[in-house]
Image 1 (cartoon, rainbow, N blue to C red):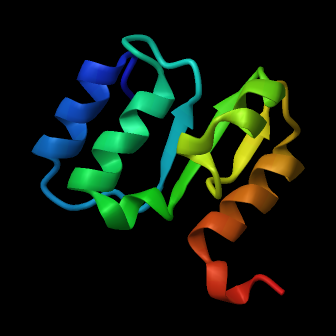
Image 2: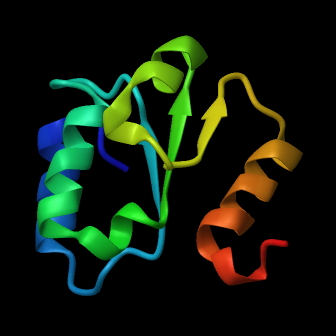
Length: 96
């Protein structure tokens, strides 16, 4: 768990093994979650495909080109919605 952009990037960079999944708040403190997407693309490209945005601003996410194609879950969300989205992010080949 990281509370801001700096903390999250530090955890990613110092991890002993790569993360399997990233739940990223669209409005993360310290420049926002979308700023992190650029860093992920550069430093952790495989993790971008396993990132899920959590957001309370669906209109902003829909118009933000930086996060196009990244699954997002609108807050508040049900466990069923989160579960379905996580399955799609973790197992993209099994989505039909």
